[in-house]
Structures are given as C-alpha cells and as structure tokens.
Image 1 (cartoon, one colour):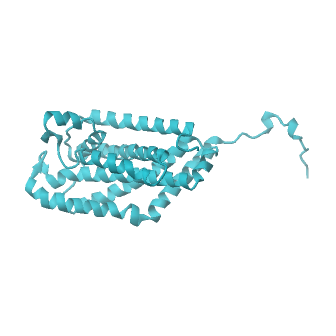
Image 2: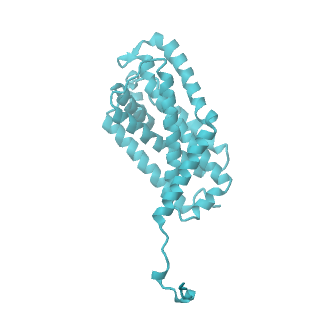
Length: 277
C-alpha cells in the first residue's frame, strides 16, 4: 500500500489545488431554492392556491353572470368570455408578485438570505430561483382559475404558443417586481403598499373588465401608459384571437419590462441596497 508524500501548504502549486466547480455549485443552489419555493407554495396551499380560485369565482358570478347578462357582448364575444382571460391574468399577476415579495422578505427578516449572499452562489442564481418559485405559483393559480372559468363560459385557446408564452413572461415580470418590493421593504407593512396602491389600480384599469375602445380618445392614450394593459390584451389575443393592442407592441413592452426589472434586481443585490445594514 503506497502512501502519498506530505506536501506542505506553502509548496502547493495552483495545479495541485482543485478548483471549485462553480457551475455545479450554482446548479445545486438553484435547484435548492426552487424546491424550497415550490414546497412552500404546496405546504400552505390553503393560503396560496385556494383563495384566488374563490375570488375569481365571485368575480365570474358578479361580473359575468349578473352584470354580464345586461352588457351582452364585448369585442364580439359574450362578456363572461371577454373577462375570463383578464381574470386569469389578474390572478397570475397578483400571485406571482405576492409569492416572491413574501418569501424574499421573510428571508431578509429571518437572516437566512445573508447566508445565500455570502455563499458562492451568483446573484443571477438567487434571482432566478425566486422567480421560478413565483412563476410556479402563478401558473398553478392560472390553471385553477381557468378550470373555474370553464363552469361559467366556453373557453378555447386560439393561439396556444402566444397564450403560454405571455402568461409565463408576465409571471416572470411580476415575480421580479415582487423581488424589488421585498428588497426595499423594511417591514411587513411595506410589502402591502405596492399591491394596494399601485398593482391593484393598474390591474383593474388594465382592460380586465372592459375594452379601451369604450374610452374617449384622451383616456385611451392615458391607458396606453399602463403596462398591464399590454399583458392582458396579449393574453386575450392568445385565447380569443382579439386584442386592443398590436401583439408585437405587447411583446416588446413585456420583454423590456422583464429585462429592465432583472437588471435592476441584479444591480441592487450587487450594491447590497436594501440587504446590508
């Protein structure tokens, strides 16, 4: 049995020291964050999955069955069918945002986020892990709300590729927005300010319940400044084949928002803004 000779540390060369496999480290880290986020969603499914389905059911009953019967058609389809894509998208927006903002802020509060920041994980890996968790919750809720909508109206997907890509990109955008909110939040009260005073108004005015063609020319121009309008209409185009917004413009707005929010989150983590005391 041969014994390797002892080499003093000062005589170790660069070649004799095994370099850490950063790709494998980040892959394991990404998988761990994603699994943690998905388990969190499934563990408290009564809080994360069920409430949106109940809320959307009430929306369909009140706006679809009761008010929709008086309105009749909008954009050539029954009103209940018209609002279905908007309600699905609204649930995706609120749940993907809410999942990341609550999870990331809890990590800040419990100080285990600092352990990730000092680990060999890249900031891109950390951001991606939380975003994937938000997307998973957003898509799970979207499937459940679509199932609920099928009891109130006949739904069909006119363009599956557009429908799927828009809902995934939108969930990514608002997962990143939730991350930014969590970075700046200093208390649990802070994480409710943006959803209450920014997200909710933009969503309700984003074409969920009406076509912007009903607005006056001035308010149509004002509505075009709302990014959620483009997401809702792109998703409605994928499902129903009709939209108030050119689909190319909608994709452009979504992608610009996605890249801008991702780079902003990356910059904030690099600078330690909202993380380091």
